[in-house]
Image (cartoon, rainbow, N blue to C red):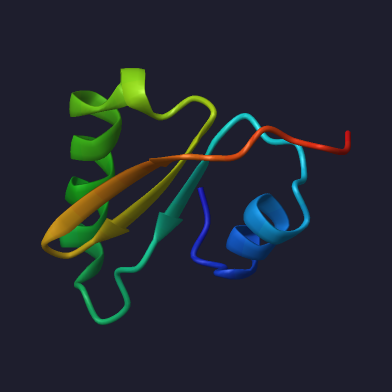
Length: 72
């Protein structure tokens, strides 16, 4: 789980191995609301997270299949 967009480059462009990435794009959202959003994603979509690239935004959650890793 990160707010660092560079993980997208690591996963998609460089093909780095990962167990799944959850990118938080919640800048400007109050801390309590961020915590609730993250909790809801892990509670409601836990089965979709492993091995995928998930983006959490204030009004949307996108889960995309990440490419197979080409390097360890």
